[in-house]
Image 1 (tube, helix red, strand yellow):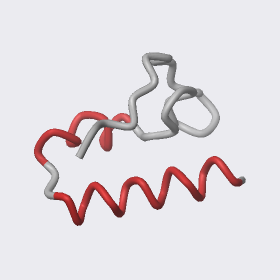
Image 2: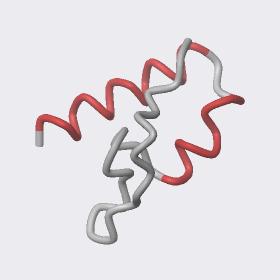
Image 3: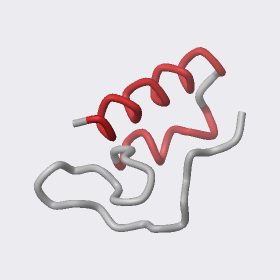
Image 4: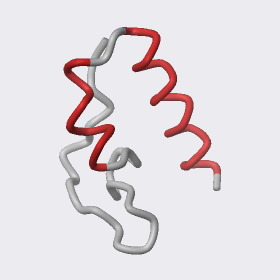
Length: 52
C-alpha cells in the first residue's frame, strides 16, 4: 500500500499533523512497519482530519 506522503513535510504546531498528508509524527514513523489493516486505519483517520 503506497504512503499518503505528499512531500509537503511540515508539522502543524497546533494539531501535530503534517500539513501535507495529515499524519502525526508517530504515524509517519511507523508507516513502513504497519500491516495493511493498520494502514487503512491511518488512512481513515487522515480522511477524517481532512474533513475537519
